[in-house]
Image (cartoon, rainbow, N blue to C red; front, side, top):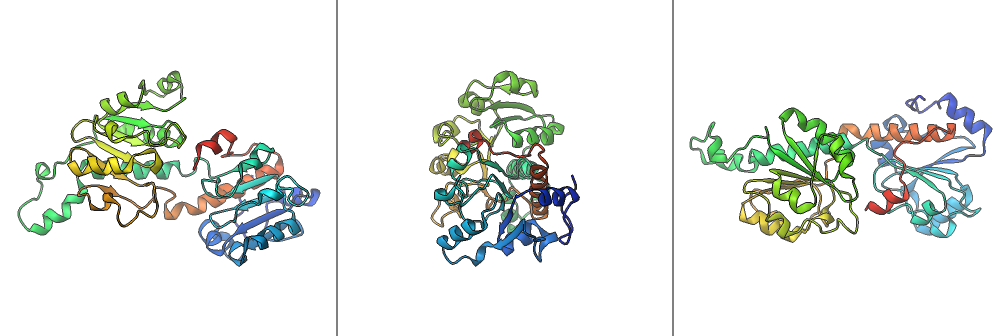
Amino acid sequence: MPILTDRQSVPPALTARVDKSQDRILYALSEKDRAQFYPSYREGFPTSDQQHQIDTGSFKSYPEWEDYLAQLRPTVMVSCWSTPPLPTKLLHTEALPLRYLCHTTGTVRRIVPREFLVGGGIVTNWGNVISQNVAEHAVLLILSSLRNITHWRAEMKKGHDCWGNGQLFGTRSLQGKKVGLHGFGNIAMELIRLLSPFNVEFLAFSQNVPHPYIKSKGVFPCADLKELFRKSDIIIECEALTEHSRGSVTEELLRTMQDDSVFVNVGRGDVVDEKGMAAVAAEGRIRIASDVFQREPLPKDSPLLNVDGVILSPHIAGPAGDWFHRCGEYAMNNVARYLEGKPLLGEVTLEIYDRST
């Protein structure tokens, strides 16, 4: 099925489906969302009796949004970061016969009430389209930590002869290291692919992921987090957030890691005891890098901001700036697949919904 690329045209299959059905598609996006994720539609999506668009920045109040939905009664909606939440009181009523919400980005909990899924509503998001980006960023943080990148500029500014002195900077190689994966989803699969050329040995632990499945990927399954952290030279945090995983990476657990080992978090901030991580990092025994935090933006009084050597990135692991349009194309392809009755990509099931943030 072709992806929409010309804002003046609609794929034949999409047009045929719209002409034969009562589906009403609503693109509920802000101008910024459209420009970032749908650059081919900067001036707007094609509209008809069955296709509508609204700039979500135009609503002055939530009741205006509710009234608009009740008036339009969409059956399919394309949403993004700016889209207001679906009104629970209208779900599964004649006022809002929405059957499918195609979310352009990741987490849907802010927009979609759980009741929508329980009642049979279908939701998709960007699925694994950004897994490669997140894994790339994790590799950047790993290599930067191993090579002690935060110390380079300070030593060079001193002006003395530090050139080529890897010992001075405490640099380490990635080759042959034991890499522990806390989490075993799409990001972990991409990390295995990206890191395999470094001749690393993989270990993993993820709650409810069967050991035979982990073994089938050429990875050693650990019995628990203690074994994973104790045996690994590098830990990559990419576990989904659940009530079981929340706060599971404790200060005590981090202290079981070997000297000069690396802990990288590209998963969820709430999985880690952040104060404990800052305390361990301040001792300088292990190297820490994180892209996600319990509060974002990171508060100015966060102890992590004052720990020398910690690498912090502002939740930019994915998508990269030149990847946004791929997320939009993925969403448009899903809309076409839905209208054609084809299986959807990146579907958010109740299990996935409950594990998300």
